[in-house]
Length: 223
Image (cartoon, rainbow, N blue to C red; front, side, top):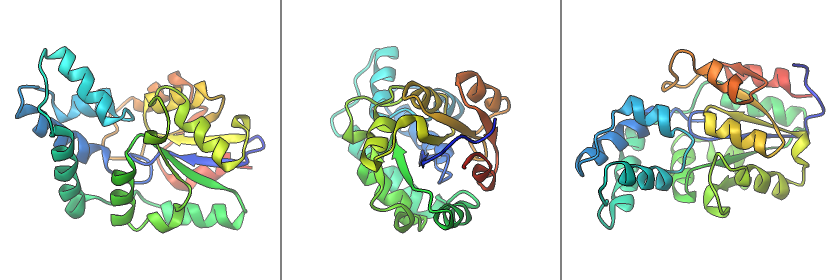
């Protein structure tokens, strides 16, 4: 699909800028198993990539007829932060892509399902925080998480760009659905470690105009 008057590029964070989804899925599986919730890392990534952690906990408590203890979310967040310190990496070509967007004077931002603390930790550890600060928006700033369009509409509003002129880069089906519900074009990204075979087709079926496995190709979809 030919690029059409893009005025803002909106990046998801996990699984697009940083290779965090597979790390988080393993940590989620381990943390939940201690409380009687049996879900493999593969299932966690397949079902909940792009979904706020809090929504995941609520869904699984209902499915497994159990209640996670007070403090679970804080304990999990601290555990994940420790793993991030040793294992988290930026995905390839983020810096080069941002350099190209800057050279073209193309505005960009982050719109993520992560909390502000998690975003600061993850983007800080990978050296990406200075590239995007202060244009980093969290699901904590809006009423509903993906697949609702709230976070993308909020980001576009804060950046002063109409939704129809935004290009979203997303790795998850809920994220693609959220971008489409916001009236935005969305490009699927399939270069992260958690991506399973056939995921590109799922992203297209959800409404992505195309998919790329290398962030360097994002510029092909930007005017």
